[in-house]
Each structure stands twice: as C-alpha cells, then as structure tokens.
Image (cartoon, rainbow, N blue to C red):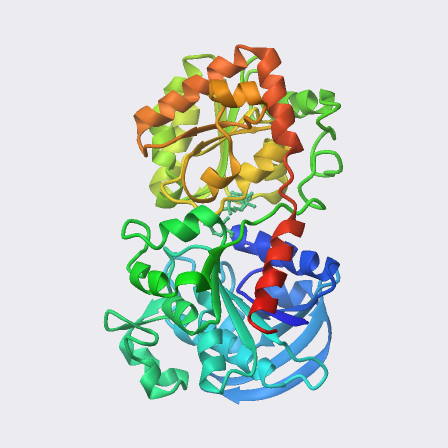
Amino acid sequence: MQILHVCAEMFPLLKTGGLADVSGALPLALGKQGADVRVLLPGFPAIMDGLNISGEVAHLHCFAGDVRIVFGYTEQGVGVYAIDAPHLYARGGNPYQDGNQHPYADNHLRFAVLGWVAARLAEGADPYWRPSVVHAHDWHAGLAPAYIAAVGHPARTVFTIHNLAYQGVFSPADFSALDLPAHFFSVNGLEFHGHLSFMKAGIYYSDRVTTVSPSYAREITGDEQGCGLDGLLRDRGEALSGVLNGVDDSIWNPATDSLIVSPYSAEKLSGKAKCKAALQQAMGLQENPDAPLFIVVSRLTEQKGLHLVLERLHEITQRGGQFALLGSGDAQMEAAFRVAAAENPSQIAVKIGYDEAFSHQLMAAADVIMVPSRFEPCGLTQLYGLKYGALPLVRRVGGLADTVVDCSLENLQEGIATGAAFDVFSGEALTQGIRRMFALWARPKEWKAVRKTAMSCDFGWHAAAEQYLQLYRAIGA
Ligand code: ADP
Ligand code: GLC
C-alpha cells in the first residue's frame, strides 16, 4: 500500500506545534508495519535545507505559476516530495505568517498548490511511485481531497483534523484563482457562509475523516466545539472517527534522551533528581528537591487556558511549590508571565521563546505538567509528561480526557491513576486540581506509585499506525 501524507510541517525539518510531531512520527510507524509511505510538503526554506534532495520528479505549471516537485530523504530515512516554488514558499520565519504575525495575503494560493500537487501525484506525476491513499492533515492540505475528487478520485483520501479552530477561510473572490470546478463552490462543497473553507473541503471531499482523539471526535459534532462545522461532521456519521496520537520513543524517552542532563527510567529515578536540580539552578529557582515543580511547555494562545494558570500561580507558590514556563505566542500573556517571574524569581521562572532542547530539559525536571486547555484535540505535552514522570494536571477535555487518569481515591486504590483532571474551565476548578497535586505530593509513597504508573503507560505510535492501516484498507486502498 502506497500512502502519501500531505501536510505543512514535519519534525525535525520544520515544527511550530504538535502537527509536526505527528507527521514526523506517523510515517515511520506506518513504515514499520510494512506500508510504503511518503510525505508531501511545501518547499519552505527549512524543508529544502533539511532534506537530502536526490532529484527532480516533475516540473508543472499551475494557477500559481511554475512549480517543481523534488524528492529527497529526511535524516530518519522518510521519503519526502517538496514543492520547490520560491515565489510561494521562500520567505523567512513562520510558514503561515509574516513578521507582524499577519497571515500572508496569498495563503490561499500557497496552500491550494499543496493540495493540487497531491492530486497530480495521485494521477501519476511521479512515474516510479503513485499513492493509493492520500492522507491530508489540517486545513493547509484540505484542498487535496477536493482536487482529487475533481479528477475522478485517482486515490482514496483521508483527512485528519488536528485543530478545527484553524480553518483556512478565504474570500469568495479567491475561489476563481484555484482552478476547481465551479460547482465545488456550494453548500455541498467548500463554500462556508459565503466564503471558501479549506477545512470544509477536507471534511466534505475525503473518503474518511479522522481527528486525533476519540473524545475530540465526539466533541466536534456538537455546537460548542464544532466551530460551525458540527452539522457537516454529524452528516459524515461513521466516516468520522478518532485515532489517538502517540509518542515517538526515539525522541521522547528519558532513558535515552541526549538533550537532558542525566538519563533516568521508572526503575532508576536518581537521574530525574539531577535534572530537577540542574534546571532549578539554570533558571534561578531555589534549589530545593522538596518543592514540587509545576511546568508549562506551550504555545501561548487562547486554546491552552493559560490565563487560568496566571490567575492561580499563587496557589502553587503559597503552598511552597515552584513554577517554570517555556512558551511563546500572545504578547500580553508573554508579558504577564514575565512580570510574575520578576516578582518572585526564586519560585517562578519564565522563558519566552521556542526551544526544543529546553522543552526536554523542563519535562525531565518537572514533577507536574499543567495543561488546562479550553479545548484540546489530542495534546502531546501531557503524553511526554507521563513518560518523563511529570504528572499531568489537565482539564478533562479532548485528548487530555482520553490519556490522563485522575488520582481519585478509587483510581489510586486500583493503581491506575496517572495525574489529576478537572472538569469546569475555571480558576476555581484549576485550584482544586493544584490542591490535589499537593495532597498527593504530601504522600511520597503514593506519589511514587502514581509516577511509576504514569511512566509505564504505553502511548507508542504502533497502536495509531495499526488503526490508520485498518482505515486505509476499509476504504479499499
Ligand atoms: P499544539 O499542537 O496545539 O501546540 P501539542 O501538545 O499537540 O499542542 O504539541 C505541542 C508541541 O510543541 C509539543 O511537541 C511541545 O513540546 C512543543 N512546544 C510547544 N511550545 C514550545 C516551545 N515554546 N518550545 C519548544 N517546544 C514547544
Ligand atoms: C493540534 C492540536 C493538538 C494536537 C496536535 C497534533 O495542534 O492543538 O491538540 O496534539 O495538533 O495532532
């Protein structure tokens, strides 16, 4: 079975969030199970620079000018087609926005081309390799199923929603530039409240729709989390399902992680104490093994619920705990966290920015990782937290609800607790969660038992890869 994944980012070439972790790991996991997998990416500078390009596959002319498809391998040995089109992709910084955090004005063209090239590969633009399934991710690749439908469905299509909140909605005036059949601009198509929606195209035209956790798959069929697309998602019925993301063990494993100060495992935890001491020192926190260290590693956006953390930081510090954050995004939130750290530097430390190595060091040092999201399609940092023995304190929503077991008395008794979860999206509910973590911390034997259970959870990619393969087979690939 030949599978082509289509997406905008891929770890380690280019990453702005969890999507890249998924597209970096899933092809490898599918490959381990015998599938023949390749990835199609826009030729952003980081992608062109990071690939070991072996040659040109095709030179095509489309509505957005000339594009070259080149082929190469990542360091991990995954075959990648990149769209070499400097006029679309050779721009510094973020793949989606300019330096002022404004989406590029031609994003409809930049990402339509991604879907269009996927359709050309499905039709056989590479004479040596042709996909039987095209698996598109998020709105950036949402037009792939539409372009494939427009030419008679030369491949089966799967569309995965990583985050329904970002939809790729453009002006109706942009439609004519995209070279799609005129009747596609309709309610039964990619028209969305008079505009055109790449996300809707992916949901409407693909054979199957998945999202990255079973709970989120249910939540998005409701009014509250459906972002206006819940009706269509309900209509898709059985064609919509949830497949939980995994953790790439070759990157996130405290026993082999070369980015952390000292390796450790569930059986031998002395290295974790060294990681904590080193981090406290590096961030200017008081060096104290007895102070539970709460962390956040996150994009600072509305989704992640971090204003609740800001509001309740004192609940951690007044109980003798510490807090460290690595994140970037919303300027006001960045400033507010900086102020909190300046006011109490021995207990609160903040690093604004994006730093892959430091995210591993924080995870290794932490006792608790906080993910109090308003909504969360899957969430990966709580999974990394489990693996690194940083107990997740999460809101019970989306993938967080599917992966963290609260340390209630009955769950403790049964030995299945891995963290703490609260229901209501409020500061008060977060405080209850913080209190529960401190109550557990005060019982070291039980804390250690919960940490051991957490570290033994198996969220490997093999389970997701198996489910995707079943899905591809079910649609006749
Ligand atoms: P989302 O994709 O919504 O941002 P996820 O939890 O799925 O949330 O994935 C986030 C990914 O980005 C994780 O790999 C996390 O470690 C990483 N990450 C987030 N913020 C930072 C940061 N400031 N520095 C380094 N890594 C970060
Ligand atoms: C999105 C979601 C996140 C998910 C990630 C990878 O960015 O916000 O919850 O883990 O995609 O699927």
